[in-house]
Image (cartoon, rainbow, N blue to C red):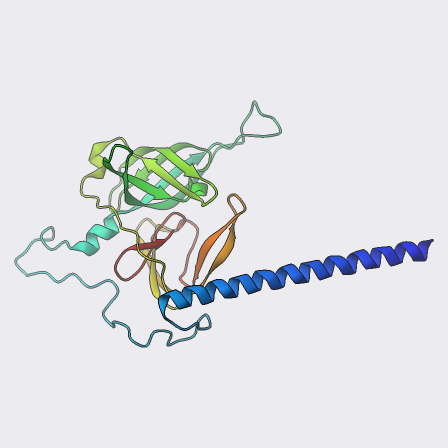
Length: 261
């Protein structure tokens, strides 16, 4: 009887390993097919992540061109598109008040966090264009107090969540104070980048108050699981340095267009 029981357990364990192996191979096959499809659409060959020379013809100009000003002109007069793009990157302060699902009439102790966001433009049902702040959903999850801070300023503006999509881990914030939007230009969305294409990560990681800019290349594009809601969506892997606080900040291409969050 004991031998028969052990034999059944062994067969079940072997069958489980076989199913896991098949699922892993299917996922790897789908990932490969997806990368081949993107490569075919873009007209480039697939390369291994981290391999140099994916694009032989590349503009060698600096990613963020330096501001060239006349000696007689003031600092305000020499502000260019670069400054406008960086000003659209915001720091978000959030106080989280998460409910206690075991004791519904109480909440956990409040926690605070800082993250990043950027200005975008949306079109309402009536055709009116409005500016909003886009960030990650987990950055403002269960947020009781949300404040937005502009680059180079100490004042914080009250914000509220207008839309939150946990499936794609994105959220839109609305700031009612009109003075907050003065001089802020919305960032545009770009096309899906190619493998080994250079990108920049903008945000406010913890450890400092100034804007951080890190660079890297796209090493992988595939369907991955989003931890916020365990949904499977298209994701991009880059080798740029990303730290706590970068959440919600944009990933931009050399045209300063958003290609990821």
